[in-house]
Image (cartoon, rainbow, N blue to C red):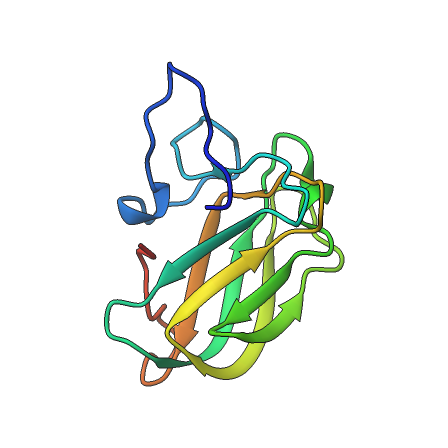
Length: 138
């Protein structure tokens, strides 16, 4: 992530590594991620273990307990190419973004001077049909 949460009561973790049942509430099951407000735009990135894959769709779960508008304007990248921009995120709901891009990582980059947080991500792609390529994005 682009920034480090410096709070002594919380240990660093990657919630997407161990959870597949995502919850849209901060702190409910530790499936949400949160950055600081980076001047150049906070970001989150995850590399695919098997190298490049053809990504057809990405779904992102917006935070539901507050601040759902913070995802507005965030860009979704597959590799170095922009897949889509999150324009009208609804609090606590999944946003769906169709792509047809090959890449070795997924990156979510927020707008400058804004916190970036979301509570789940599902990536669909080559050979996966309707199942996520990476049910557990690491």
